[in-house]
Image 1 (tube, rainbow, N blue to C red):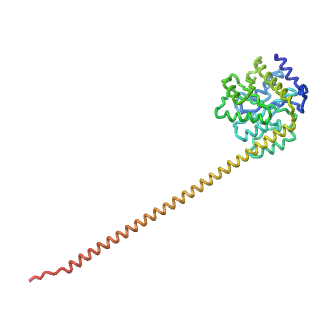
Image 2 (image 1 turned 90 degrees about the horizontal axis):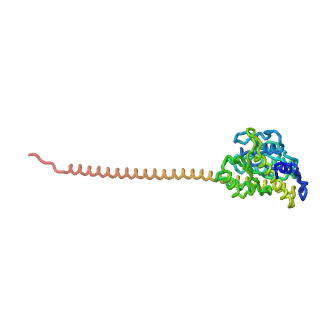
Length: 340
């Protein structure tokens, strides 16, 4: 299929064209998620640049910095049936940021408003507050973006694999992986790492940027092929019975269970930490008491030795005095010589 045919297919896609009809859906919500500074905003600009076929516009505020700047869930309409969502990226993979990612992926938080990173059960309150804005007619499709420039640390592979697997449990779709900056690193090595995680669909591309938006067939084709494959995947999935309202409920249950287990684990860890501190304090008190006891015992032994020595010296002195007295008495009793 040539570029014009791909573009026409993507722009004209509608759920009405699916063999089973809409099944309650109105648009595909392409959920972009990943780490800070991996090219999500530039990808959005590239998609709009390719589909709209107009001058390049920095819609998503992308820059050349490696630091991510998106702090809200911002939606970008591509066609009547296709919308991109630039979700707030995470800086680390702890349970709190992961929970935020899942809540965004599940489409349980409002679009086009700032995203706060909250701790405790505050995320539950935000999900409840957003219930009136959540649209069950959105077909949630996860896209995980990763920059080739960022080598995947070996100690993070398992965490990343778990993140992708949970995204599948949450959405029913194993995320498509989009590798950005494909000429800035070892593409083959990175693709192999993701394949070992179970990723089947991997797309590598170079984003258009404000500094470099010279149109090329290769970059246009990479973007269009990805969007085409997303639509084809949705058409395939719609061959099976689906209930969008039940899917929202299931996603909400997943998130609430995740938050509950996270908080229970956090509470248990806090209790264990407190117990360890108490034991350490008790141990120090016991140690001080043991030191005091040993000191007292040593002092008692020293006093006893001193007393023993004092008694011994007194006895010795008394014996010497007695001996001296006896000697004096003996001398006094010795007969006196008479001088004629």
